[in-house]
Image (cartoon, rainbow, N blue to C red; front, side, top):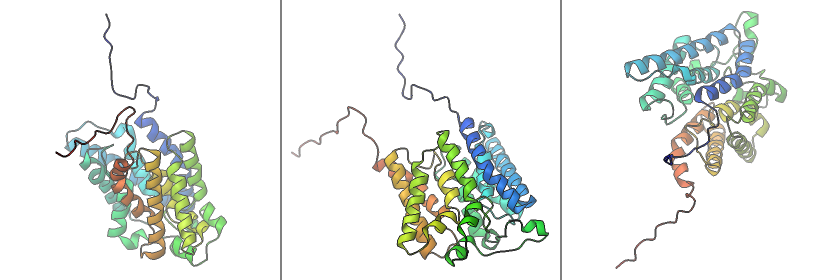
Length: 313
């Protein structure tokens, strides 16, 4: 007689794998990467290549030194390197990008056990470390297509131009403004985000609530919400960093709380802070609070009743 085998859920496999999910994210980031190369030239292409190569090498070397099984084949290091590159200005020295990739992979990811164990999105921490360490280099924006003129033409920070009233909606939507390589073109990011939603790689809850909360708070604070949404790293963060499986809540209510928190902190930093951007810091803060959010909204297993406390004698 055959034995009845009982195993924990899930009992139905979706067919998705880590490699397949990461490949979808890479495909979704292709429009933003291509636009960044078109707008910012060969420097952008070189920076993307160096970030990806550095991230993959850092993962391979750290796993080798720690005597752990190699994980480069799951493409997660490629995703981290690509997202980090799109968060950088095209003029950033390559050695700084290598440092950012190493911090993201080794310190944030591998020191905590690898994929699935990291406390925060590695690319976000990599960007923040570079911003705090090399502020001048990380805020050296250039105008799109200035590489065709043979000389990089510096420009004001995107958010500074936005709040000064100098930015045009269409230019910001198409990415014809200064900024980090992958965050200027909202159209490319929306295309990538919609692809991920259609592929069911991410839920639309976090991007929609995050962007909506930020827009609402900017409106309440007297700022232009449309320009606020189209400028800075909000779109890139909402679709590709805040939706990270490991560092965002599991439940729908948890995702809403997480996204609202990201939106509130982003708006407060933009309006009242001295930093040029608040998206990365807000997502990092909410990444740290994710375990608490999950505990707050944890679902009660079906059929389980809360134990009654014994009456005090």
